[in-house]
Length: 502
Image 1: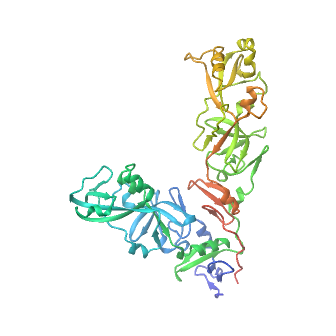
Image 2: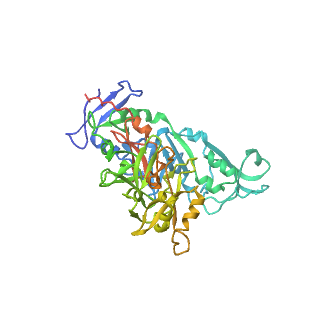
């Protein structure tokens, strides 16, 4: 135990320092400091990206991160970090495997370096970063006078920057340069997948270089200790005086994160349990769900989702399979065969996040024929089972439904329908569930049964298994796992009570 120290700002505030291990993998110091605890809850945010320990900068004070991980926000768009005396923009950050994707700040606009220098292994080893294993090496010759005939992707001329670079080329085989007259060569890292696109002519050189490469940041800068700090309801930081990791604490147990509290209990609408990626508009915070997955709960206890500007009733949600059965609300609002409904637009792509489930059944697509004469249908009893209602407010004209595979019936039935202004019969196509075993008698039953849709959104299982609640932070436009201490990128860490300061 260290002695109590008076704060420089107020004699009534105390800072307590405690060495703990308590079975954790990494011993660390806890500092009871409410102001720094609150300050370090605030992430560094720039553009659509958010960073926690070991990063700091802007409103996130230096105590909240390691000195080598300072960030600036360039033009309110690019998080900027200096590594080996060179400025990089952070394009992506993967907190769970301590990796950042970066690109040289001088190369973002035009793919050209302002000064041609290599990142040497020796220099990088002196930093808290190391090149990731998924990087490739691009050998680049510059200021070449003769001897190389470039193809369109190998040529890279940069003439407007601080150091003029004439007639530069990348080489697939570094030994190819031995007989060429060039000022020098450098090695430029880039992600392997984009290097492959480059050498197969799917990308040009400048576009490939602008994709950047991966740096991993090393564990010996307090990352393991930070995990244990978060388990104890602390906030991670770094002491400028002792130059070591510290854990800022406020009490034995801090209050739960408000995002976690808001999203912890799923909502019920009718017989449906609503949880991530869905959320009920007006009953849940938008961050409890995913963009485009907002539902309304109508007066009849039905969950309604809007897809392609049409309302669909959610009949059943399969969270494990990321699929849902929906039915057009206009079909379900048909109380009987005499009810009328408006024109239903052709069902094609629902949205980028929803796709109609594929099936081998040839009876999973239905064509609707509009404005068909009821008098003609009555004379052909075979088509009465295909009548699903009347069209608009016209009680004398009907809507007929046929499986798309029933081509002969469609041709015959279309002769009973009044053509539209362009001379064609008004028709639309919709999907239906595979219904061979559902015992449906009429096509009205078929279209009301709905169809299966698969959704595309962040998988929630890892977060839920760790005790978290899935959500989406709109200010950074990223999925987050809401945990009792704070939002995390992927999952929560097991929570134990923080040790009392003695």
